[in-house]
Image (tube, rainbow, N blue to C red; front, side, top):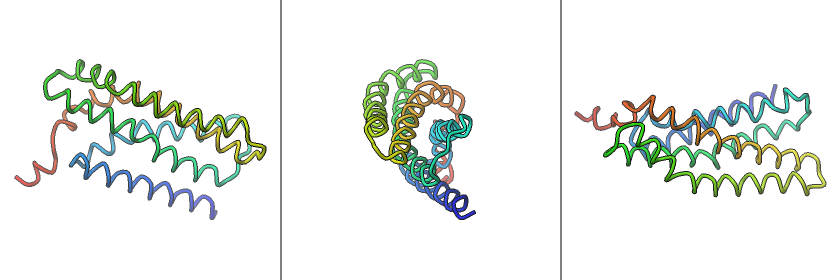
Length: 174
């Protein structure tokens, strides 16, 4: 019960913290939600894999890895969104998506590759099973976040284009 409560609290505070930072950065209340969806899906899948495989994992792994994965990989979505909004000023949706992915790919692959490799190196060389499991979750989670941001996020950007291109704070001021 304590572990479930702690996990829920940590996840809620992590989401709230990321939401606030992204909301103030983009001056939007809706963009943070769009930005966090692919990362949350990646976290859910990453945490579901051990359960589906029937693999036991230390309870702290879920709390630690979900927070690390959100904090370390949400930048991929932010970068892609920022590039999309910049390109959308001069291009139609489809072309803006293509350009945003093209401009973001290198940075996402570099950062995601480093986190993925670091996680799997810990997994492969650690002599402590619990630490190795954390490395495995971090590596797999970073990889999943990277893949989902580069595949799912462009679809969200095009789907929610009208929201992304409308600045709610400016509209509320008027």
